[in-house]
Image 1 (cartoon, rainbow, N blue to C red):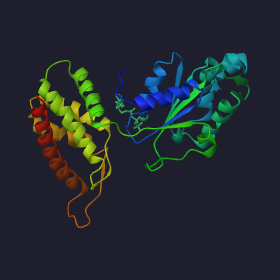
Image 2: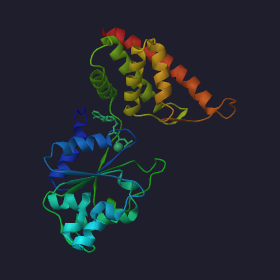
Image 3: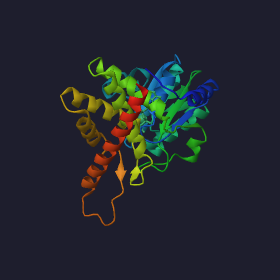
Image 4: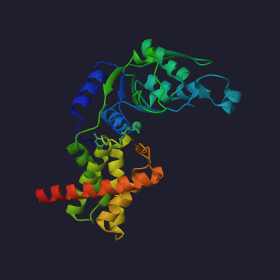
Length: 295
Ligand SMILES: Nc1ncnc2c1ncn2[C@@H]1O[C@H](COP(=O)(O)OP(=O)(O)OP(=O)(O)O)[C@@H](O)[C@H]1O
Ligand SMILES: [Mg+2]
């Protein structure tokens, strides 16, 4: 897996892991939390067990459950127990990677407390499960300000070191998009189109983060979508300008939220479309100038 930049954050995460501390990665949507967690755990040479937090996730799913037909045959015990990611990670001294920890119900989060503190949990009808050396938790979450974000309890927070992720620099985002676009293409478009598309996508999404009409801006994930969609449309014969506009209109509405003008007679969608038209025009013009200067 390819990673760009994040030197400081990688240093922080690796120091935590070396010191046997649990890590919480926090940052806005699409900033690269999951990516970075997978990237660091990838070169740890430890088994990784992944949990994707949602509000219906149960304690049984996390620690493990008994398979009813096996229980009938063999009774309760190791032979009828299907280990969940927590028990697997503890027993194998691996990493439990909990994506979006704050979305887990509080009761499920609390199962982690003894696992982290005493390195031991008690599974009903199975008994004690001890953590082998190496067992660690890496988790991600969106910051409090984000809509639909529930908060982690003080007890849970107290057991994690916090690594805060902000958006990367324009140069790094551009490189992420360019590389992805190149591997996505495998030839075809000219180099000028690639650089122009990547630059325009990155600049446009970055602009949404500070635009006065935008309440919630878009991440590099949006830039990746725009560049790839535009490329597909161009290869179907569309002009670059039109393809870029269509791609932005496909990729952006789910990812940004705009403030409606008080006296506007247009619908929110119409307002968004005219903003997008204006943004695309400006970004393409500026990016084109930049790309030409470089050549
Ligand atoms: N440093 C990086 N190097 C290469 N690619 C990256 C980097 N950071 C993010 N990406 C890419 O950007 C996209 C978004 O990243 P990711 O899914 O990790 O964000 P996230 O913060 O977990 O988002 P969410 O809050 O929605 O879960 C992914 O396609 C990821 O591979
Ligand atoms: Mg994620």
